[in-house]
Length: 344
Image 1: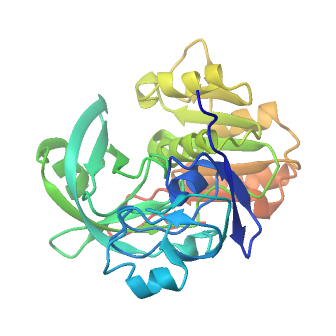
Image 2: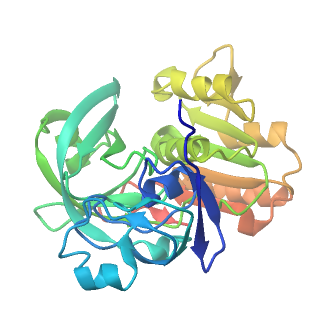
């Protein structure tokens, strides 16, 4: 068997580097290595991933002429979603470091699957157009654009590397017109429009601190995205997940966090119920965090749930020594006049 080629790709000006066997595009290999480059369509049509080859050779693949002209190729430019390395490479390109580095887009989507996982929770899977992708950071959200001009915001529950679809966790809200439509009127293959991504709730990957991930109800959705992204990116920082709900039905994907913890020694999971007696932890989820960690000075915390939970957690965690700048939160608000989650 012939030996598998191995090429080193170095990005400038960051100096970040990774290795690849050349079978994947530069973009895919970079994403697999935990480095986020900008992209839009992933099929050589939009030009969002265009960068310069400073040194080395690439196969341009299926890059389309309108996105990468002959003059572009002669000048050393390439579309990294199509280009595959034929040698070691030095590339000049922008890297995505914060939410402001990702463009907000308006896109259509098709309802692919409506899965009722609890009496009041639906997991909604949305298929994106074949020639478009939504680049986002784990933990961000989108806003549906409704026909009456209103908007409804939902956190993205899948990780960014699974970008052919979007998964949302929708709770039925009393008096909520859109959620009532999801539960009683929406059908598979329906077409919707949304805008995004939005939000500053995303994983700070430059930190080495252990993480506590606190979710209340469907606040589990962005926490799921964070965890799956961390696993995919081989981030081995200790992660302890506290998921609070009123009863066992509120832990609507009960096996998933247990599977994470069973498969990865650096992940632990603590479910907490406030209104049901059971064999596990009871009370408020953020109080369970404090019982286990009375000193939070060395931690980084990501919290998502109702505003009351977020406010109480922030105050109590800071009182327990958490540096305020290490508390990242996404407060879900459900009042009809609110068009987006309040990002703290």
